[in-house]
Amino acid sequence: MPPRLKLRDIAFFERPVHFARPFRFGAVTINATPQLFVRVEIELEGKTTNKGAAVGASAELLVPKWFDKRTELSPAQTVDDLRRSLQIASGLYLARTGFLTAFDLHAACIGSQVATCAKKNIPALAAAYGPAEIDKAILDALLRGVEANFFDGMAANIAGIDARLSPDLKDADLTTFLSGRKPLPRVAVRHTVGLEDAVEGEGGIAEAGANYFKLKLSGNPAADAARLVRIGKELDTLRREYKVTLDANEQYADLAALQALTDRLDREPALRSIASRLLYIEQPMPRDVTRQSPLGSLAARGFIIDEADDSYDAFPAARALGYHGISSKSCKGLYKSIVNATRAAKWSAAGEKFFVTGEDLTCQAGLAVQQDLALGAFLGVTHAERNGHHYVDGFGDAPAAEAAAFATAHPDLYAGNGQGIRLDIHNGDLLTGSLHTAGFATAVHPDWSALRALEQPKSLQEHLA
Image (tube, rainbow, N blue to C red; front, side, top):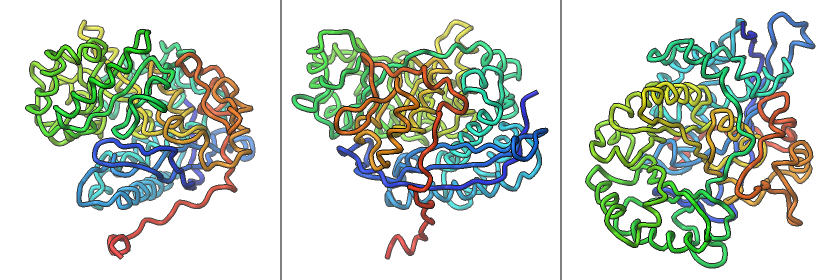
């Protein structure tokens, strides 16, 4: 039986993060945004008060205009809705006062979370952010409390994951999938080329040291094709094998616009380098359009959903429309990622290929990148988008002592470059060896005294003032 726990406390903190270069995706450009930190305290059933207590942590950027892209909202308003999502989730989780498994707690709260947020005009994807971050911290505390690492703990289903939120699966599907996991010792970095990133020359993509590249699209087929030609020429100078993915972040208006892009990929000789190395196209259309638009013949190219992944039934619904993949992002919920990976494995056993990809909403060095990397390595994701090392300088605004503590505890992941501590990429890969430590992929926690309390969300009137 998985261990049961009682949640004693949840605390939220944040820290400003200033970007080293602008990150433009979709219709937004980010130069700075806060990073969230969560700290929870749990009590393990059947243990004495002192030995049964454990503290866990998680972290993630509060990214504007990704969870909610509605044009009438300012970037700051969308960040405040993430703060509201956290506060609502905290109330729901703390209201459960008995001993439960980690997944019991998640399953008991996620429906009420989405419904309560909907009443406050917070969409489902943003609603899931609060539980996603709390769940990671609870899992960290649980693993610390029983002195187990993430990979062994999840293989044994320490969280008690079952099929109650995914009735298309059986409990045995999940336990069989979990017990068969063999975590990857290294995961390739997929380098993002944002819409304002340099292509050629100094700071260009040839200097990235990666073998996988994620290329952002603007939604304009002609402009995107012209830019992909430039990128293809630059990547060909690498003189080594590379692969690419494309990500439109919901910017293609409809299937006709998407067909115009794929026609160019199929027919234009100048796009042959990109087209021949293309693995999949990510979230081309707005999430609401996606749900109403079967891909038809386009499905043969390989599409995945990301922003449209806002519920436990999103992947089966996308499969019915012709999509073959779905992204794993710990900010959308680690349990949903595991459920979707189980589905992909089960469906693929029938002969047609379905898959889970590793995408990244700028996970920062430290807790966020380590927990997301561990999740991907556990699921068998061989390459993952990694934005934090590219758009933020190392540990960013974190104190030097905090960065040094992470580097000491995880020497295969970080290295000093004379100007601070940064992710250490080994021939295009990140190593996962040091993530096999008690807890959720981290031997240390941030310096809580160097963080400020989560800012209170502003009202609409305050935003307009």
